[in-house]
Amino acid sequence: MLEVKHIYKTFNPGTINEKTALRDVSLRLEEGEFVTVIGGNGAGKSTLLNAVAGTWPVDAGSISIDGVDVTGMSEHKRAKYIGRVFQDPMMGTAASMQIEENLALAARRGKRRTLRPGITRAEREGYVERLKILDLGLEDRLTARVGLLSGGQRQALTLLMATLIKPKLLLLDEHTAALDPKTAAKVLDATERIIAKDNLTTLMITHNMKDAIAHGNRLIMLYEGRIVIDVAGEEKKNLTVEQLLSLFSKVSGSDEADDTLLLS
Amino acid sequence: MMGFISALPGAISQGLIWGIMAIGVYITFKILDIADLTVDGSFCTGGAVFVVLFTGGHNVWVALVAAILAGMLAGLVTGVLHTLCGIPAILAGILTQLGLWSVNIAIMGMKATVAINVTTPELLDKLLVSLRFVRDAVTGVRPFYRHPIIVVGLFTVVLIALLYWFFGTEQGSALRATGSNHNMARAQGINTNYSIVLGLIISNGLVALSGCLLAQYNSACEINMGRGAIVIGLAAVIIGEVLFSKIFHNFALKLLSVALGAIIYYIVLQAVLATGLNANYLKLLSAVVVAIFLAASYWKSKYTRKKFRPSDIGKIGGESDA
Ligand SMILES: Nc1ncnc2c1ncn2[C@@H]1O[C@H](COP(=O)(O)OP(=O)(O)OP(=O)(O)O)[C@@H](O)[C@H]1O
Ligand SMILES: [Mg+2]
Image (cartoon, each protein chain N blue to C red):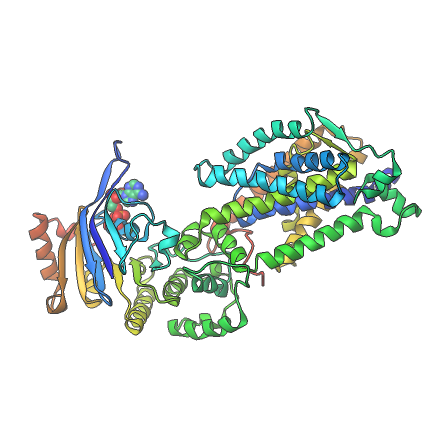
């Protein structure tokens, strides 16, 4: 479903701020695979997701989604294939627009925007049903401005928007990191249910090793812009946090694992 | 005082004309979250194109449509400079505005002023609005519906209806989303560059229409007629927001409040002039008033930012049922 081949990304090349965030990263996701991504701060996790989403072009390598080469495709064109939830709860929704308007925008992802009505009566009813999945009471507040919602509610709404039209690929960038533990658990739970229901191919970044082990069927770890650990199937299922830590010290050749990874 | 009262219909007429320009400013400043300085140039472009075509014998509606299209073209230029060439929006607007100064003079045949010769009654009667109609409609020389307040009021209502419809469509919603949150818009597959260019085109089309109406009203187009237009537009937007945001939540009513804001601005202007203040100080006064109101809304947002980010304050959309 996703095929990343030898991608490189260097920020601010040729300046003192030069930073190579991705080095020769290759990754292949089969349809329905749910991959959790871990790594310390600055390891390149967000950069990997941004590269796939097309926030900026990569320096080298290629990216294809469902057989379509998207390497040179602009971000808004790629959005046709991709559902995204950002780390920042403010980033995924339009604060000045209503809940239903935000959903209506998401319902038209990848379609041509015409001069037909931006939202119809029929779709409103559908949104009520969809919002019930989240179990946050948003279904009664269809016309509320999104700016009035809490961070957790906005993140949950963004998740719903990202999956309103089934995406070929779902990208979640620490989407529960900014939330309080209770809300985070609730949003993560909704995530799990939505992914399972539609069998979505997913890349989910998390800082929480327990979450990374508990969710998904494959786990990768990034370190200094490289994928250093990639476990799946039974091995992933039986993984413990301790094993993961020792695995990390081995590949990174250091024992700084505790500092860089146990931030959560 | 009598002077002020008798000046009122004229002030309201002019306020309505500027109100159309202010609605254009609202689209860029409030909906797109861009301060577009093209306005100061495209306002005059609208007037220049109209006057030249009209005095050249063209039909008044042909001249009017041409004026709007010229303004739209100016918006397109700013939009392309900003999106495709990566020039910051304010600078892109300034560049277009500067370039337009030469273009406008060229349109006017290298003259700083072009007048419509209204000494022939036939020609005067062809105009949609004119300063002279304010009295004529009252004294009965012309039918009441030729009164500029009614004519421009009608224009305003039709424009608001059109914009209300447009911003409720898929494309209009995409434009609002672009102004509200670029990241979200792109993640939802919206071509934000296209939205921005489209918004600038619509906005400057309205601005040029306003300039074309003012040129008719004054029976002349003057190269400096648009100077400071952006500030007048912002003043109208702010006055409308301060006075009516509590009662007007619907998007169409918000646009109406901008038009009302422009009228109030012009009435206040007349009142200030009636006190005998040298007209020279009006621009300074406008600038100070707008600066104070912009600062006030920034400070307000700074101290009540729990639920809002400053950039969200006062944006449209939330309550609109468009
Ligand atoms: N747009 C950018 N411009 C310049 N440098 C960047 C940019 N984005 C990321 N970087 C740099 O690239 C490196 C990798 O950043 P990235 O955001 O991918 O890390 P991350 O693994 O997501 O970390 P975190 O857990 O803190 O979110 C960092 O050193 C970061 O400073
Ligand atoms: Mg990150």
